[in-house]
Every structure is written in structure tokens, then in C-alpha cells.
Image 1: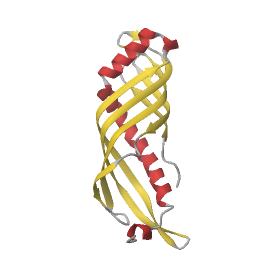
Image 2: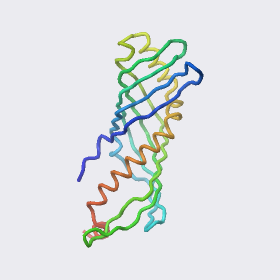
Image 3: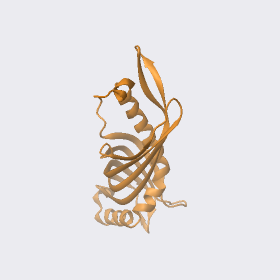
Image 4: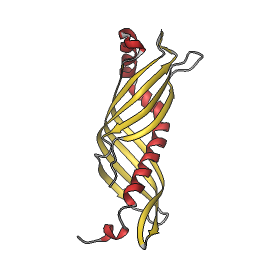
Length: 189
């Protein structure tokens, strides 16, 4: 079986404030840890195009990324780059989609055609390091902003995050399902 962690995402672009000097962040080379440690709390199966739905609890997840920012944060010019870290906890993911059966080498396998992901995150802690040429004042101001506005930042991130996670999860699910014939799911052993 292929390894599933860390999940790798290319980038997220966020505009956190508007205007000509609006504060913008780009997160690149994102590695996501912890999302493979989950519990399915509800499952409604679908088959051959019928939709499925799952509710999944993820106790904690962390994100590590390269960070680039431009613009003004609070009242300080805050353009720079460094590393970004987010620790997310108590996550409920709602996963919806469709699967179909495909035949490969005389055996039937499941294939995910469509996948949507929605996330409800109760606890979010974010921080940056090694930014602004290690300027302690700008780094602390940015971290204060992230601490005080973590859920608002998540709200801004969520549309892109949902789309990118759905793409990654669909690819991983299809990698795994392509190695397990349907008959294994129905075996009594």
C-alpha cells in the first residue's frame, strides 16, 4: 500500500485584509499530518453513482508550510517569508461523493468519481517562524494576529482548503481502492 502521510498540498493564497496594502499570505509546500488518524462516526454508503456520506472525527491535525506575506498587518509593513505551523484539534469532517465499480484484469474495484470535504474545526493554533529576517517585533505581531484571529483565518482558508483536501483525499482513496478488489469488502474473514 502507498504511504498516506504527510498529505502534500501545493499552495493556498489568502487575502486577509483588503485595500492597496492589504495583507496577503501564500502558503507553499504544505505538509498535513494527523488526518489519517480518524474515526468514522457515521457512514451512508452509495454504489454505482449513488452518493455516499461519511462523518469523520480527526482528533488533531498539523500543517507545516513555507510562508510568504505581503502588505500591512495591523499598522506594520509585514512583507516577508518563513515557516508556518498550524495545530488543529477536534475536527469533524463531512465527506460526500460518488463511487463506481471498475473492472481491472478481471477483478472489480471501487473508484471514487467525486469527493467533497467540509471541515468544522473547534481549536486552531497558528504561528510563524523565521520571518522578516528574524525581526522579533514583526514575528510577534504576526503571531499575535494569528492567535487572535485563528478562526477568521480558517474561514478565509476554508474554500481553498476544502477543494485541495478533496483532491488529495480522492487521489489517496483511489490509490488505496485500486489495490483492494471489491470482493475483499464482502469476505466473511
